[in-house]
Length: 114
Length: 115
Image (cartoon, rainbow over all chains, first blue to last red; front, side):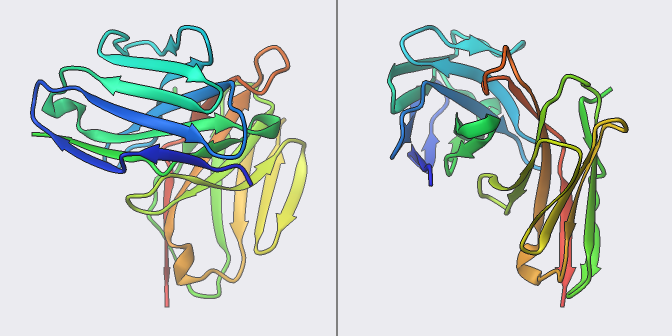
């Protein structure tokens, strides 16, 4: 079946630094990938839709200059959290579309900003 | 009003019992519905999808969809302690016939199966 990987699985950084998270589709091509954020005891919130070769579409309230998304190939999308602050600490999960609208999720990246 | 609503629980059932999870949605344009299981600290994994009215069975899992009532449910038969997790209901309103519409999640129901 379709598999999505993410790297790193866990990152701890100092406030003010930037963090890049990679999302790869391992055995299929993903024209569209989705980035979610999940705070403790809350559901997944869609941050942006990443389209290969074009600009990402951000959800309302998500700062596009803070959360930079690049989808340079059909198997790789990256999310860069710029100038991270403690309130950005969260579980970031990417996903790709599979048939009939289903989504396969990556394992997630736990970001902790000190 | 939330677009997809679930009872957050926790729902506690004894091992071997049937667990019943419910979900309602507000967007009548939703075409596809999914149930995901999420263990603590992990990402969601798809366990069931349903697209038309009626029941769909897969092993111990049965999904039920009633578009007139805008209601989706998941039944887990012979519940096991390993089924203890958060179950997320999600709806998809297709965009222009593609599968890239917005997937909207409910807040999840915490299920605990006790031995």
